[in-house]
Length: 584
Image (cartoon, rainbow, N blue to C red; front, side, top):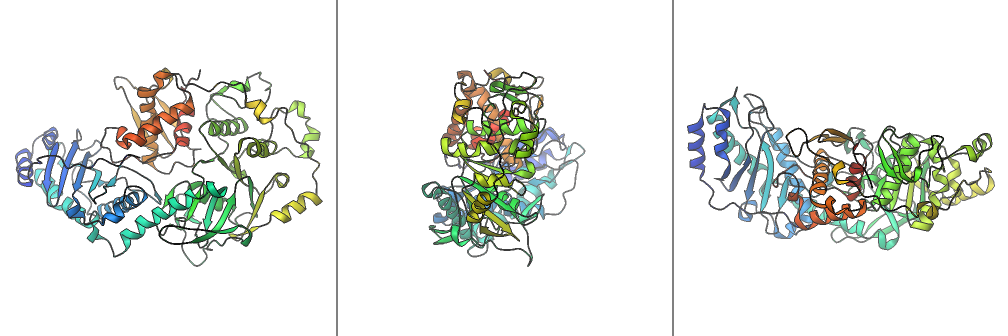
């Protein structure tokens, strides 16, 4: 991806001029703050005010601080473009957010005095909050609430905020001397090592790697930080699956390699099956040092699949899994505003293949049971000519053998899958073991009598359907007089124009900033690329290539600090869940 733009604005006004301006507008109406737009020289940095909020109750003003290399003191070797610079930038953003969050509670109306940055959580992903240049220059982008009482400017408080509090905050978070010895280095090098580990998966025919010593459990379902305490079991690879991968900084790393093919993760309840899958699901991203998963990596094109009752589906060929329906709906062009569990899961798989997924991740706890399996007894009770669903068990082998698509499945109650598995990993008290041979023996010694149900071979069911082409007019981000109206409500959805896009089931979106970038990318796709009648796959290529060449500043207002890079799969998921989408 193109490195960030870091350019100190020419001829910034002096801090004395800033002080004079704030004294002059003290007590005036809030809109007089618009005189602050532009560049101002602060001690050791430059303040750039890009947008001034309309009143103290609106979203805080968008500002940046720009620091030259002589001020930051960041070692050039750690600022090398790529994973090192991203690792440093995420560390600086987190520290900025921590220091800002510890400031005294601001006083005044609305958002007066607030300083907020969109810092990364546990993941380390390229973003626009803090960007580090190759010489060690730094640009931090954040929101700042300009002080007011009612709607009258508090000029002296603003002077304290901009000329004292902000420089102190910069000094405590954006320069090398603010960090302990070795802290910057470990964040840069750990991120680089994670990239190196992931790059070795495909050449070794692996879909995932979990390092020995990794700590996978999280504190809770809503707290992604690592669980702490003596009860946490460090990961230890089974000897049969252990391998050692080289890294440029930490040297050789041993751990469990998960081969391509069909992999089952089995075991009793609460023994760590879903925890392992969740770590692999998030292994498409790097993680900060100390997270416990910083050496857990997965196929970058691994996609989590689940059932999503009630989601819209737009002209998707789900016929490889769903045949003739009693309603007469054409499953080669299946469309519904309210999908069932089985049809939504079938659609999610076909959409993932369309966006380029190479590995499918599934947990039986979040899957439709009738989509995953139909056992022998049910086959006898309900004959195949009365059941339109081809269960996943009868396609998972074909997906790999015919299309090269691997699957990792968490199972606790569907023993029929032992017949189609290449690798079986059992979790017992968070300890993994390779039970592939035992699983094969069980399958051989205890046949279920189940009969495979495949009306057509997979490739035959998929062929003949032309690529889906979104209709440009069906993506309308306008609302009233506003040409673009977006409102992101969190990582699990946003409003696009007048329509709500529900992303609750898209589990690999990890932050509000990533979801916002996806929403902005849909706007980019609509205005820049959709007039050419692009297929979904080609449209994804166009958007991701544009971001790679021009950077994340292509999205939003151009200098936003709350955008995080996403994968093509999450962009496709948002497009596919847009209620108004129409497809030729």
